[in-house]
Image (cartoon, rainbow, N blue to C red; front, side, top):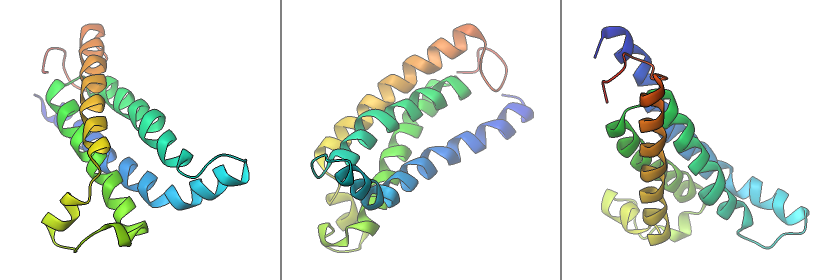
Length: 140
């Protein structure tokens, strides 16, 4: 991997947890907006987990076109989201130790992270095949 490719890769890797954290922190506000629009509680979280985060995984996968980044990024995306939710809804966290925070992650978010990894991998492979990578072609 060239120095230019590495230099361009780091902002993408930082964006994964930043997007997840931002959505997690925004969840209560998004939930209030969704309820004002007449939806049931939890719809904003469901939209974040099932629409926005998968779209982010695909966009980032296309941007870096590296399979290993898609898997690392999927974990960072989900962990960032879980961290944002833990801050906003502290009653759901048993204790604030790393083990306590990890044990408070819902199993559905773990399954979703695997889905993000698969979607990101497919996008990375497509981006690599098209030569859309931030770096040189073939450095997946």
